[in-house]
Structures are given as C-alpha cells and as structure tokens.
Image (cartoon, rainbow, N blue to C red; front, side, top):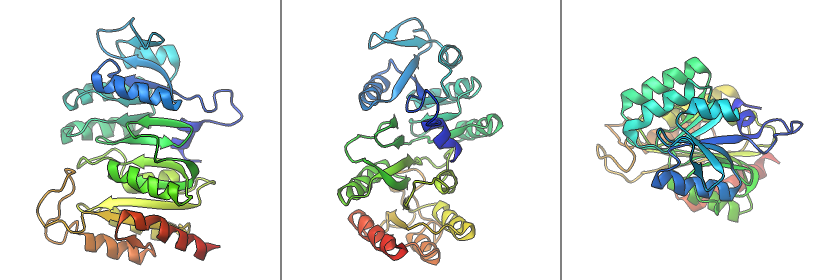
Length: 305
C-alpha cells in the first residue's frame, strides 16, 4: 500500500483506523471555516486549527486553535494538514507544516508564486512529505475521509481511482462513474497551477499498487507534457488494470490560456493531439466528453474479465 494510503487510512489492526487526524491551517477565515465545517460534516477527524494570533480559541466550541502547526502537532500528533490561507501566505504556512512533521499537505490556494511552490516542493522532498496542489480541490477516500473542498454528492465508495487536473471535472466525471455503478477508492485533484507538488505521474505511482483498485480514470487537460509522461510510465511499468482518460480543452485555440495557468498550447507542445496519441500508444482510450468515461471504462473492464 502506498504511503498516501498509509497516511489517510492507517492499518485496519490499529485503534486509530478511520480516525486519522487533520489540521486546518486558516480555520478562522471565511473560506477555511466554511470548508472545515463541510469536512467535519463528512466525518473527517479535524483535531486542530491553526491561525497565528488566535491560539487558545476553539472552532465550533470544540476544536482547539493554535498559533502554529508545531503546537498543533505536538498536541495531537497529526500528520495531515490542509492549507486555506491566501497565496501570499502559503510559503510560510507550508514551511511551518513541513518543519513540524506533517507528511501530507493539501494546498488549496491558487496562483501561488512559482518560486514559493518550488521551495515548498524541495522542502517536502527533504522531509519525506507529500504535497497535493497548490490550486487543488483536495484528496478523498469516499465515505472515509475528505481533505479538501469537493462536494460529497458525486462520490461513492468503490474500486476506481480518479486522478484529475480539474476540480470541476473531477466532480462531474466521478458523478458519472457513480451513476454508472463505479464507486471510487480514491480521488486526487492534482491542481491547476503551473507547478504542483504531485504530478499526474506521481499520483499514479501512489495508487498503482493498491490492492482494491480495479480501474483508473485520468482527467488531463491541454498544456504541458504531464499526460505524455504518465502514459509512458504506464507503458514502462506494465500496468494492466483497465484505464481510460479524458482531455479537457481539445477545442481550445493555440497560445490562449484556458482556465488553469498551465492550460496553454504553444505550437504542438501541450496539444490535445499529442496527449491522445500517447494515451492510444499506452492502450488507453480517450473519451470525447465526460459522460463517455464510464462507458469506455465498462468496455475496458469487460475486456479484462
């Protein structure tokens, strides 16, 4: 089982199974408090909040707030933190978390300066930690734990892993999968900033050996070469589980940024054609529209029977 599952789920033989503690950085802000309440309602075990200068207060009259992540970790032993602070404060918040022993950092803010993101990624490597984002909807194991801003309705417990660059498409495609009878064992929003702590290929490495995963859905987009790199990794690894993909922005004009900061095609670099071609080489069908994903997945799973 990959490290990320160890952090999120733990060992079924341990008393803390299904009770992994989560720290919320920026829990007193309007955005952080809203989504902290939503995470609590889903069943996520939020054990502490962090807002400098507000230590000693309580969130919802029960969750202690600390001035630093170090104080929160010392008090709770939590290894997961989600960051809701504005982009300009992300570097300081992330360093506080990683230097305090956090092993899974979910970075919600978008438009984080690239230099700050790179510094945080390097620090995470030194500390043996995983970063999801920036500009991510988060990560979840349906019906177990939600660390992010995604609505719960589209997701259902099951055996399909979904890796997505787009938050909105993560929700839409997961909803289509759920309605077609394909629940999810994990969903990861990679994030839409140009540089992310976890690339598609990294997320694949996290989930490819999970025993209860029966299939994989990849939601990519135009721009960059992360889909091509992932397709090559799938070929090289000999991964045989049913896999399908969807590429957003196939009709986008070249050299015009579409939505995410990294979603831009320069010449042939980052084009949908390049990505579809590489996925085809890896024997991964690419849906033309999100609703087609479960249809293609059912076909692939039927072939593997």
